Image 1 (cartoon, rainbow, N blue to C red):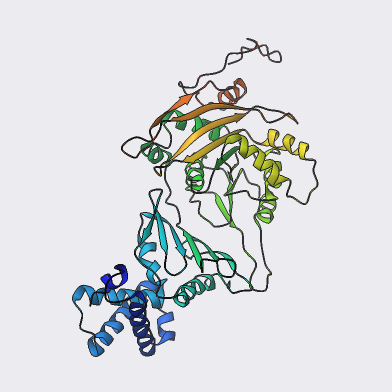
Image 2 (cartoon, one colour):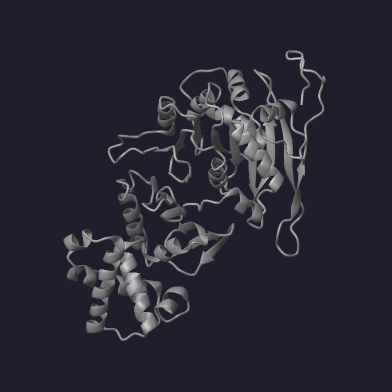
Length: 448
């Protein structure tokens, strides 16, 4: 009897449901023999070790006869069911997996290195999948049923979870788990081809010169990863407040305040939104505010903070280009209950945003900065951006990889002046746009 083949090979003589019944049977026997009060007092690692020992005694006493590998796998499966998330538990321990997607009990997909693949594993039944979902949402004091068929939650280890069940999901209960992203440094991202040394010099200067910067990109392009890496450029000694739906940023500075929104409880009370946290952060004397993602009316509060003394703030937004990012900020800001003419929001954005960094995920799974743009418009002018860096992609090669190169353009003189006043170097690859006049009419000094 091979548990591995029973689970992973469809044409094996044992079905997943039979295998699931075996696991459920031993899980019930295990629960009969343990003291739940005693188990709750143990640390997680001790709890697992204790359950494995007890289950080993049960199998030795009652059978079946198994090889060493089969016995170890059965113990692992049963303990995972008793303590963790069943068949998903090994996937959560696999560092190469960035996303787990369960489309009903019979389909489990994962994303590795930007590529999605289906795994030859499944839940024994719809009921087992629902038990796993209920275990996840109960850890954050939520419930999922026909009255509440959609839930967003976060596992204690940090993974983001979305659940949607029938009747809204016609394919069965659907579970999506996004892994807590590893904190990459900008130098590591250079090694991956996401940017180059000249772009690092520019971004470092922009952050240290306290430019307000928006990271834009579609889902899964690495916005949070880049935001976390850029935050490493913030000088020590500044008071930084991070605001997120799910706490993912891992800042290394000494003076960091981390705020996380809170969904409503089962009585639909107690919700704390990103907007509530942005407003509260303004009373906390921040040097910089970092918003993990703007997606609603809090955008207006963030823009007002950026344009009223909180320079150097960072945020991410879902958009497919720099121009789209500005239009999306305008749309999101209009969702505030404060009635502001749509044109007046252009003034807010033109005053607040300095730089847009656009990310793209390519067909080979690679993620790159594809555009660094400067917002050059003022007041209620239509948005006008100057792209100073762009990734020029070539068609996918025979090796299945997307190749290309970074192209640079001169920095607008206003940005170059601000870098100069902040004692930040201007990267040689960029240079400075030609002056309209050689002398600044206000200071009579040579413009950079």
